[in-house]
Image (cartoon, rainbow, N blue to C red; front, side, top):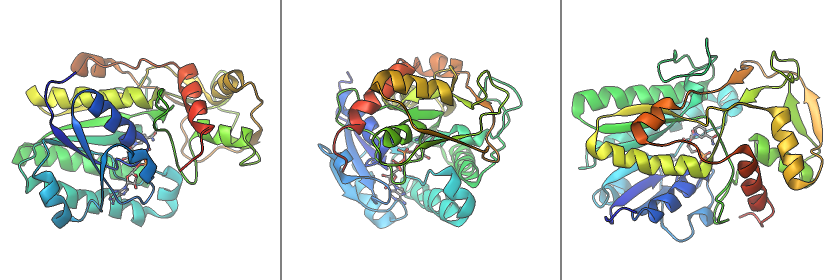
Length: 325
Ligand SMILES: NC(=O)c1ccc[n+]([C@@H]2O[C@H](COP(=O)([O-])OP(=O)(O)OC[C@H]3O[C@@H](n4cnc5c(N)ncnc54)[C@H](O)[C@@H]3O)[C@@H](O)[C@H]2O)c1
């Protein structure tokens, strides 16, 4: 527990990962101030915290808020890979153009600590596994390109103007707050585990397996899942790291790969129900395996993922059975 009562601005705080991080911050003695335009977020996820409705490009609105915080955590972004392919303008506008306005607002304040939600999407199709922070960054979709562009801006600005940042490159976020306070609320839902729950609950006919002919042990894609509460804790560690250290870019992952079929088997075991599945063709650009090397996070932040796939599924299932916002 931190002995301070520092205020932290959390953009995108009414979203999935931002809301979990708000709880982690509060548990460590910080006061999160959530800032969200509610474009994909949900007011109920901000319950218990100060929520200011606003856009990250609204520098006038942000100025007095920045004057009362010690650091920023920047989650606000659009985050659907598929949508970014059909509507890249929406993604570059929000994640880059508006994002840069937000950095300007930060520079015009006295805040110099910046934690950014980056993504494994910046790596594209890895040449070798596991993916380290030094792996080539070659995004294969506009979403990944926006995340890389923002990281590059942070890097250049920090060298030229002095700003400490942590670019946290999350792999596949999953699960929900074990205390049941917050969880995933996305519409449409595209993430694997909540989509499978929707199929179980009859909210969709089936969940799709996008290709079962990959060169993996069971033919389905393998991904590195990390519990959202583990991600939230990493943000607190990153904040503490930036108190004493220079900028950093780091993978946040478990280092373990699970195939789509393995995830469904875990869901069936946890829920005691069959997952209605439809096999369809591969989605262009989906690499067979994405697994990270999480060593740097351990060495720099003292962080490693605590929750298992079983716990990701069971906490998410607990949340999925509650009424949504
Ligand atoms: N969920 C994942 O697996 C994952 C993986 C890698 C990276 N990320 C990144 O993590 C961050 C959070 O993701 P999430 O899954 O919680 O998404 P989310 O959609 O639940 O949360 C994003 C929040 O940002 C808000 N927002 C968007 N644009 C805004 C703007 N212009 N001004 C103010 N608020 C705005 C939305 O209303 C929403 O509440 C995103 O930056 C995403 O790219 C997520």
